[in-house]
Image (tube, rainbow over all chains, first blue to last red; front, side):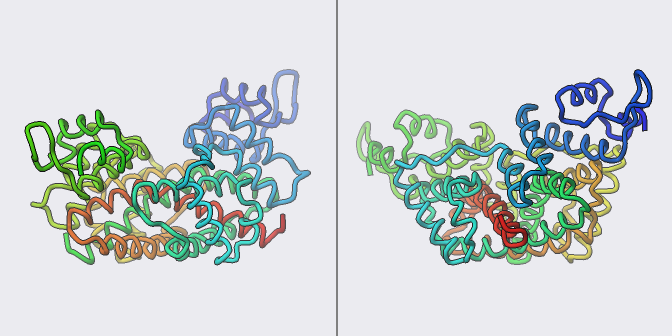
Length: 213
Length: 213
């Protein structure tokens, strides 16, 4: 397809498409003349991912570029490739290791991962921004008087593992490693708001079942 | 306890405590002299909730005040009281009902709620900001090329219902209706980041199990 159709189908203006081409966030089209190029479904897919990152995820362009760099790096193994792209997404503040609540939270998180048998998560530990985010969240709960410990977290973690199994099953339906990495990132950005809304709706439903309206 | 101890134990400065008292976000202490008052555990709990809303949830003071107004309104039934407090929390933009993706998303969400037998969620429909948030999230997924439909959402919704059952079980351990409403709001603000981190950690773990590192 030509640039105009790519713009029409992706919902991205031609000037933004040219900007993403210059930034290397979109591969060049196949040259078919001095000033025209031909684009295909992979370009459309990439522009949708760029929109997900920038419009929905509100990532700065530099961060989106870094995420896409990992998605495109076929020298990486699949877990690392997915992981690198996901880890480049924005995360909250890092835990302050001199804080007593952080120290206690880290112990509980490590105990949780041990109980669950999540060996990779345990091994990677604080290398993972998601491990750090969990420590921060648990420390905050504890600081505000909720005695959130490994035993309380375990059933939630097991439910989230069932969610993750479905996520990965979905990613596996994608034909190539590049598309798998793209869909993992897009699903994270786009799907987390849906999951949060489902969670809150389920709370309302369950509350109405228990107590009426 | 005196103001100084309340400040020490809550981590909120005495000047901020006085501000929250003036705003009606914290009930006055019991007068024990011309210039001193006595505070108890309910004041400590409330200050922790205020911190959760303002420091962690980053709510504007006016919004936090509205949320607390519902928490304190004992004229409401329990579901409505919890719901009113939760619904006053900030939500994303409302769906644009003239958009074809929003129309399709709303149909899928309604079909999902019907299939699940979530009668309250279905009845309340767009009255609930969480219903609206789900429609927006599904519309965005569909606009970006993910054919997210009721059948795909259903197993996720069922897992989120299991999470919600645990949430409500936790809320029920609180002795009074006021504390139940407080803990539901605090859990939403404080617990969602932990759940998101658990979800992402579970994805990493599952990816490593399937593909190695």
